[in-house]
Length: 387
Ligand SMILES: Cc1cc2nc3c(=O)[nH]c(=O)nc-3n(C[C@H](O)[C@H](O)[C@H](O)COP(=O)(O)OP(=O)(O)OC[C@H]3O[C@@H](n4cnc5c(N)ncnc54)[C@H](O)[C@@H]3O)c2cc1C
Ligand code: FES
Image (tube, rainbow, N blue to C red; front, side):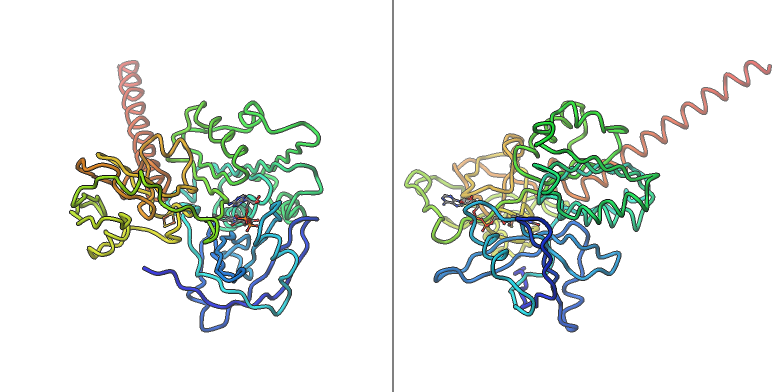
């Protein structure tokens, strides 16, 4: 599956803060269906850059359930190419090449009605989070807590929109702003203060790496099941002039002549062609495991390495924790030894909607079984007392 790109026109530009602008995108009528999206998804943009092309992802901060026009917000990164170029140059009427919406950082329809929702955003990480927030408010009755960390009050993106949502839904939406300028960086204790129902709630995290690590570590300390935690990492792919070549050590890796891939509940044997990635080999064998950027930063092609070893050329989409658990990106992996290699693209050891669904389903059925058991015991006791 190759990702589709189209030219979209900039319909409006709004300066949200001193270093962040939002851009409304107009989709031609013939492409409306292709640009249908779920709250939390992103677009990938392709831009010419000094003789080559660069790609960057930006999350949609608009909400599909409210019929809002597609909108992104881009915050300047010091020394960054595209974020500064967009803030300085992109104006109404300009055209920009954008992929169709992609991404797994979305709400699970199976848990829409019940479980509390915790949203953790840091800085520009608010973009997918506010989309999820608006969607959950519009389509569910869930209780929602947003913890939004910024350097100071002036750096809050979408402040008015957030205030308006709190004003409209005070009974089930709690927003806690955190400003580093007033109380230092967010701490684990502060994250814990907001938590409740951690056995069934869902957690979405997006922000700078240190912020995400703090929240992820805290959730792990309070034993939140990892399948209930969704993360979106804001990273750039290596531009062609910044990409590093393969080291001689990597070139000398031995490799098996085939590997096994669990996909859609079946184990498939895939011939391995030296120098190709596991994703390329799977595609050559007629398989279509989930993937999107093919550059190591979107995480759509995650798989669990059951046996054998792989080397990843790059792995921006994964945390150290993911890698330690044996998660690999198919689009970046090559075998690192001749041992038999088996991967599981269906694995629930990383966060996908289906993983949450199965986990939630199991929890609900455990709770139901416990309730039936409690009812039977109480009923027996009552009968004994009556007789
Ligand atoms: C799914 C997804 C969604 C995203 N959504 C948003 C969003 O909604 N809003 C948003 O603002 N951002 C978002 N991002 C981040 C965005 O894609 C870019 O990563 C970000 O804007 C920085 O891009 P840039 O071109 O400005 O910086 P880059 O040019 O990529 O540079 C980033 C930093 O790395 C340094 N750097 C990079 N390469 C080198 C090198 N070889 N040597 C030395 N220094 C180097 C730069 O100096 C700079 O400090 C998202 C990312 C992803 C993956
Ligand atoms: S397809 Fe995006 S990380 Fe592999």
